[in-house]
Image (tube, rainbow, N blue to C red; front, side):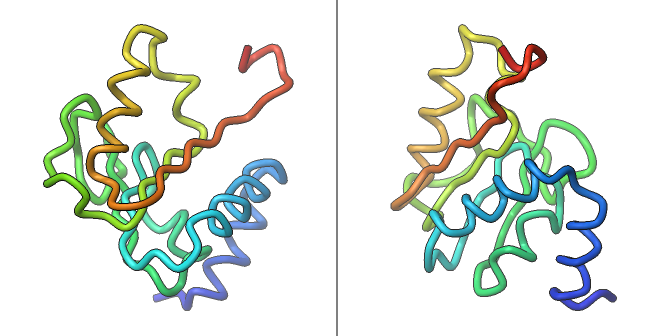
Length: 124
């Protein structure tokens, strides 16, 4: 099993620089949250940036810690200290984005952080 530091270094080597940078920014914004729902994330990807938090990667397909319908997350209101979604919003059809965000706000007891790449034709 990889230690958190070794996993972080491995992920840095395998990640695009802008992806790495977004994870660092999100980790800073999450602050001291102890429980984080990462909607659309991959298992272990955000964990290394938040060593003091329990991160649950929820996605619509494997790999995931939990498979979910992002329009109806299977959690009580405010159960997580924070919710995050990195590099996902641009893949959600425009008419579904309001509900996608509303569900994350509903299950977050504090912070919801949405992050996506900008500035390239692929992401317009």
